[in-house]
Structures are given as C-alpha cells and as structure tokens.
Image (cartoon, rainbow, N blue to C red):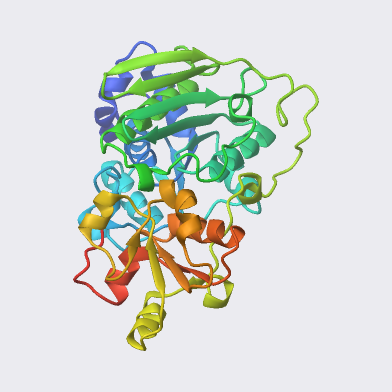
Length: 380
C-alpha cells in the first residue's frame, strides 16, 4: 500500500504509482490539484473522464446547456438516458461513476465576463473545451489576468488543434489570434459537422498536457500549436512566439479587465420575442393556419433540407444568401429558419442590414418546430 493512500486508492492508481516520473509524490500532486473544464461537450468529455480516472482531486465543470441527442456521437460523458438533463449534472455523475474518490463541482452556468474570474479563481489549471470565439477569448483573458494556464483545444470537421497558453513565459491565445474572424466566416461544428472521434483525440491531448503541468514532467505545448488531420492521420506543429504588442499579455497591455466578448467578436444576441425579431414555432403555425402570406427561407445545407423541411419554404443556404438578396421581395414578411436558430439568427440580421424590414427568426429552428408543432418532421 502506497504511503498516504488507502488500499483501494493504491490499487486504483497502481499503474501510475509505478511510473518513475509519477510515483507516490506525483499521485499526491494530482490529488491536491484542482482543474476547471469549460464545457461538458466533445472536448470536455474525454478530458473530464480521464482526469477523474487519474485521481485529480478537484474537478470543476461549467456548462449551461442540456444534453441533446445530437451531442451523443461525440460527447461521451453523456448517455441516451441523459437527454434533457443538465450537462454539468450529467457530467458530474459520469465522473463520479468512474472515480468516487474525486471532488466534482458541477457548475450550471454560462461563463460570462461577470462571473468568469470568480469561477476560474479557485482552480490551478483551466481546460478550454468551448466551441465559440467569444468564450475562447473570455477564457484566455481571464486566465491571463489570474495567472493560470489555459489548455486550449478546438475541432472542426476532420481537423483539430491543441496548445498551452501560459504567459508570462509563453504566448496567449490573443498572441495567436489578435482579432476574431468576421462573424459567419468560420462555420461552427453545428454548421460544418465534426467527426465524432476527433474531439476525443484533441480532448485527450488537453488532458495529457494538464497532467504534465501538474506533475511537472515532459515538454509542454506552450509556445507550440499542435495540428491534427484525421483524414491523413498526420500531426504538424507550429512554433508560436509571444507577441510583444499583445493587448493583454504584451509589454504594454491595454486590456486590464474582462470586456464584452459577444460585442468583441461581433456576435449579436438572438432576440427572444417576436417584436425584437424572432417568432416561436407555435406562433408561426398560427400565422400559417390563418393564411398569412409569409416567405419562409431555409438557410441550411441541401443535405439538411433532405432530412426534413417546412412546406412552402425556399432553400437558400447561408453561403448563397448574399447573392440571392436582389431577387427577394423587400416588402415580404420573411421568416428565416435553420436547425436550431443560430444560423438563421445571423441570416435574419444580415437581411435587416440589407434593407429588409419585416424579418423574423424561427426560435429553436426546425428542431423546436418538430418538438412543438410537427413531430413528423425529424429533429436531428
């Protein structure tokens, strides 16, 4: 039995205890460490499971979403029976099922500028498992201000990235990406898709870097961006340099507190009520039943249209919307929809900026239409 560990713990961690670079002292480091995982999704799932299994003493996982069936092909923290459950709650249950010896903080919240510093402060290391630019910049900036390492990962279709951002010795996320891409230029995983195993690979790289940092072993990915292509099964590496002019970690930083990251990334919030630009599926169904003349625009991809669509709608994918504007009736009452309301929210705003004054976004997209109005149209 290892000194300071119970017989059960000694047996549980025996393969790590026997490693020359870990041993009893290393396992004690893991037990006394605290990790925060931002997002209980594709990247957070493997990180959470393996860090719990490794015996990290305290693991926080922050997420405000609920489990959706479309998550399950890659978010292995959650089971089919968890659909509809809060992700943070489902994640905590899975982690404790793997290792009841660890402490899990299930944080049901959306990380924002108002709460990020408070949520991150108690933890030694932060794993960024987010899937959007505002949260990545928020996590980066909060980590820099608090002096904590940011274990970064991202995935898209068949490719992934991983890095460790840890000033002052190494660069931060803003050194790599000083400015976000224009809104809508980079599709989300929802729009572009992702191979289910890919987040598992990248998430495990993030977990590996976390364990190395805690144990003080190996060469960190700080100052390096690891690129992975699943189709060619190739890893490439880019060397990153700290940017002396970086707005938050440079020689003369201009950012000293958290900012409005939605505004910084040019992401407009989707209004919640019809008078502010959106409409519920039930309200749309009522309008159609009354025979109101509406122009329905489906901004999804053709393969999504084939899964199911609203009768009478026109298919105009986001990539073609700008070129189709001249032929659209500017006096028409337009309702735009997609799978969940995200893409169509951006499309509706684009149409308003193009001079269309009667444009509504379908809240929750065709998935909510399936749930609230017509279950014969499949959600996906």
